[in-house]
Image (cartoon, rainbow, N blue to C red; front, side, top):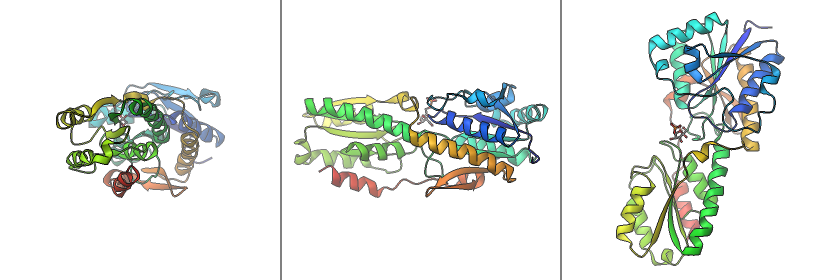
Length: 327
Ligand code: F6P
């Protein structure tokens, strides 16, 4: 056995379907290799407040199909302060935790990086977990595929009623300041337009687009709006369109937190299991301050430094494709 005797594992930030499969992957891999595992509940909050639980092989039984996270999660303001991180470090030391696996998004991995810059002797490895898929260095984040399928199912249903009434629907999806969920769900559902945070001035184009006669002859129009879009969300856009195009029967639907829940898809479970396994192997190989990610079907390690500094890009060319496909 290597020098790591006990691994801590936590989920942090917004929960995402598939996080449980990652917890299971980390726990069982570490136990298999003779290490002990401590679950840190409520993310960094639990690290600061000593909310720890011993993880055995059966602690992670029957959780693959469950959404959410059995370890709970939180966004910790205290961990952003040096004093909070010091307390967290002292607690890790007292609990004899030699290494930590953090499952979470951008903010959670940023926290891990800051911590590792201050305290060198407890290595952290990250696993990308967020429905937003907005993390540099990985093609997939855990939860994205499930959220996407939830959106697609909801939009398909809305399309049925939109088509029956000849309505124009604005459907708002999550993603914070990134447009990955909007873009992919829009393609999957044949949206007539997609508004994303990464592209500016889209609302005026949208009006132009709605003016085209042939669009008005469609039995339904679906516009997917990413919540971080500059124009202020689906309700604001719907209001402005209502005034300019009184002949459209406009409705709005904000999908909200249903996008974060539900049974994880097979894809999310596979990605999560493999990344959980890879995270423990990375620690055994003396890696630290890296995220394990998925790149071209291979598992890769990306330094936190890059993950945090670089921004994953959407491909705006897809927007033109969406327009062409929706004529
Ligand atoms: O990051 C995941 C996410 O669901 C975003 O898409 C969304 O903007 C945010 O979290 C919502 O956060 P909260 O859990 O605070 O409502």
